[in-house]
Length: 609
Image (cartoon, rainbow, N blue to C red; front, side, top):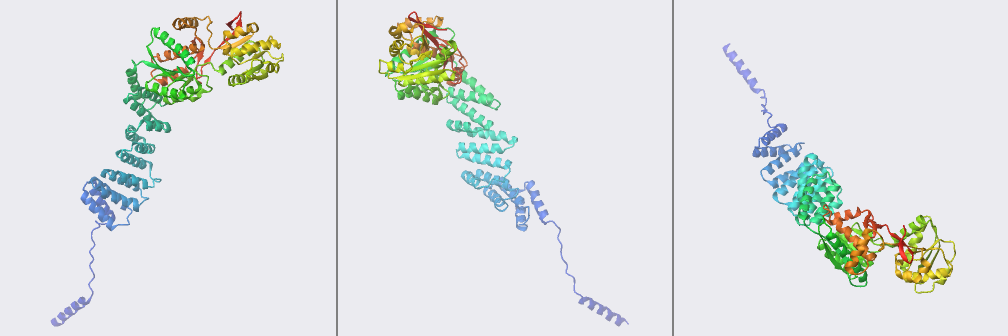
């Protein structure tokens, strides 16, 4: 029995030994899964254990290359490399995001990282090349703003302030309010590096008020620092007026106060630009007498600061006139009187307008004030004469039917055309209009062509020598009891001597200055003029005197410092009482004068009221 039990146990053990053993599999703890590995790397990152963080992120990239978190891991690595000063490695990590994951939310930040790495290494042009290669359409505004700031920084370091200014402006347009102050500081810095011409051009073309204000203020500051106080004041005053709510307005006002303090004791200089030699010298020297007398009388008045006078001879030459304007601008004149001749007036007006200097020309040149806002005119023009003559004859005398007999040359044709247009504009009629040869002395043929008794007045725009011949011939051909209308050229003793019997009480002419006027101002002027020069003044002397006094009084106003303020004050002159009557400029800058209306009575000229 005992042997049997032993054999049974041995058999059972043999059977068990023949059964296959199950394989034992070791299952590790889940500490190295995708999520766990990324979390481990993040913990190292936030604890600033950069080396272990980099190892973990690299392992993550190797083990899980298709993970959605790859861009995030690359950006973490870029940040760590940047912190460690390893700019090339930082750039390479960000470039992998840009190349491999262009639509990722991390791509805009990757672009910023690349630019920062270039700037950190001083690779400024590489930063700009990289920027130029980018497609920026889908980048959010907040990132675009940062990108343009970085590019602006690179451009500033490359000494390209104009390009940097453009970049900062773009950054500004994309920035939120919280980022504006930082960008504006950079913008002001780039603007300060620009040439004045560039700043002025940018200020003119940009529409956004804040940036425009920075440009204007900086331009004014630049002028101030170079002691160009006139230009500085012009720019700053314009800035304050057009953008009153700008943050730099108070700075501009403070700067203006400094300018006014520095220029308070500076005398104003008025330029006098006249043809003192050449073919128009007779007129230029007459005008100079009026200007000189005005300076003497102004200087005698108490309470006014002294004024300097800078006299230049145009030599009746337009090129010399242009050169003289340049010289006066360099002498810092506040305004210019003259010139007189047509060609020299045109050249001087253009040059003064370009230089921003008010110029009051003494010329009949048509439309001369169209040259620009700094060009004024105070002179007796054909248009003013015709308007005054037609207004008086039609409104005061009740006339409506006229004839015109005029010399067939420029002066006569100009006045005839103006007269006909003005009569029609006021509802009257010109029934006859006939030219004549100005070289003739017998005008019978031309007079016969208009010799009908159905008009009330005849206009003859010619010099007294010719008018003195024509008037008796009108009477001879039975054209009597009609009014004889003439220009200021008729205001001559020669006309009375030639045709007095036919003129008495029938003449009506316009004049800019009437020496026999009984006003105290005219009497004092005439007396002072004769006392100094030993002769009677005429219209040219009188209008030059009035123009000079207007300018002297304008620049004596305490708030008038520079040419632009002189210009503005001139446009405000209304009914200035001078020896040539009432004068106003207004927006057209072409003096509107209330002319004298004269007739002949008892063998002398008298004023009609």
